[in-house]
Length: 164
Image 1 (spheres, helix red, strand yellow):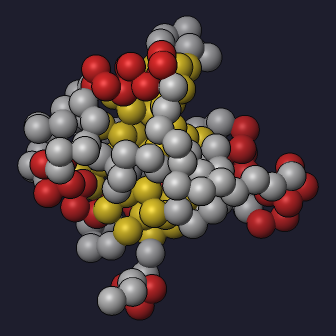
Image 2: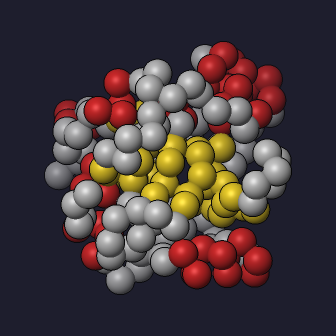
């Protein structure tokens, strides 16, 4: 695994800080996007809706995003908020895209998740509450984090979308 520029930022949380955020409250989101269930169903595919709004998980190795390492941003498929930069992406071999750090400390909301009998920390979009995936303390240094993210919850920004 590689050390990434994003993981070197001083605002990148460490595992203990994420656990504290789960217990004591998350950062205020940069903005809020709220829609009705019918609106979400209208703008998302069935799989995107199932994963992001119903907290499901896509099949491992089902997306080309796992092996895509081109420069750019990964945005929330629901609200278009930039969540991850490609500089923090790495191949964890899990079958889902993995990132060492979010693009900013206020774009991910952390929630305790014991829905499968094993305590985990869910990673959600802090702007629209979309389920993205989970975060684990077994990632590359220096952050030690692995954001294991459902590819259908992300949209890879095309280079032409980047603003100067």
